[in-house]
Amino acid sequence: MKKIGIIGGGISGLTLGCVLKGSGKECIIFERSNALSEHGAGISLTPNACKILDEIDILDAVRAESCSPLDIAWRDDQGKVIKKVNINEFGEVITSNRKVLINKLYEKFINLGGEIKFNHELLDIIKEKELVFKNQENISVDYIAGCDGIKSLIRTNKIKKDKITFSGYTAWRGIGSSDSKRINIYLGKNSHIVCYPVNEKLETSFIAVKKSKIKNNESWREEGSHEDLLEDFSSYGSFIKSLFQSSNKVYKWGLFDRKSLNSFSSGNITLLGDSAHPMMPFLGQGGAMALEDAFIFGNLVNKSDDFNFIRNNYEKLRVGRTNAIKRSSRYQGYINHLGNPILKSLRNFMLKNTDIAMRRTRNIYNYEPLRIINNL
Image 1 (cartoon, rainbow, N blue to C red):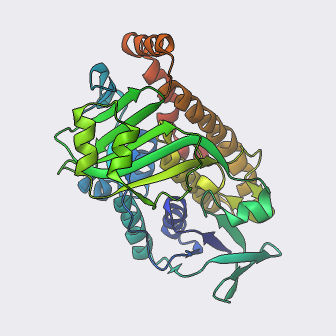
Image 2 (cartoon, helix red, strand yellow):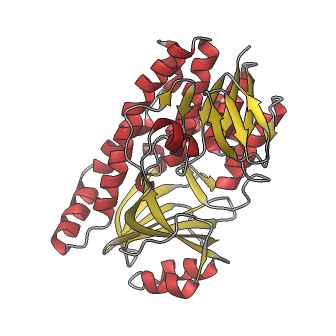
Image 3 (cartoon, rainbow, N blue to C red):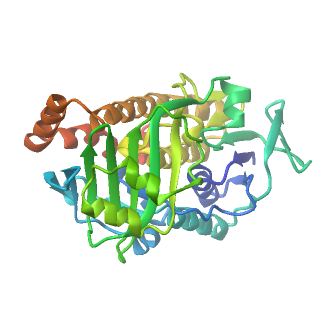
């Protein structure tokens, strides 16, 4: 049996491990940190993500520690509703803490007999088979799945020597408290804020994004100050200001990107998740795409031992879809951050009086990866 080496213990790496171990395949996860991340951040699990969590049998466990919001409301910066849509119009949507998802994936992987090696920071790959780690351990595998994020060493050294570039957006995040059981999207001048409860206690995650010429660090673990946050979004109403102040800590980081790739593979190496296609968070699809990548790649491995078959079909199924969503996410950023009053009014009119929001997400949410794989 061939062994898959998975570099990175995030969403894509752990999901891939669950899919492979669920079918008895040999794999091992290598994580550079000494433990799973304890940093909390909100994550919205849209219908395409929920389908995959259901397939790997952790949807109920995630749902039990998360929230099922009632609806989605688009608002202006003072909180006036532009449009409200019942969540059932989209399918099942769960809002959660990223820690919950990571922990449930990890528990599933371990319960399936999976192995994860912490403190294994990749330094090099020799002949596409031998992994060289900073702790001076060398391990040979038959195939390498690069799940090592936007700063992917595997991508830079083995796939494409492109650079990480600043997107022109700065983001803040935190988890406070509110009395709202809905997803709220506030649209302001050159900025927007998304907030939603992450559990039934209505602990509420927010991400606040604004255009910026200042290149902040890429790390989303860098703590900022409440004063700076409130100053950056001073035009917003009392609900937002109260939410910001209720967050014990707030974090500020720059949103970075990399160019779209025409291929996610080279030889015995394939990229998944942010290492393959980092994207702006404006459609909430970064985590969902990581889940889809891992589910499809894992099921292709389960379907065939021929790595040419696996690689070719993974490219066919993932490159076009993820690059299209990557483009749409960036375009959504432009729509969210309009500054011109006339264009803002036109956007709000279209949002209120048409089903444009539904049409933009329908093809994303209705994706059926298992059916697609079974039809190969």
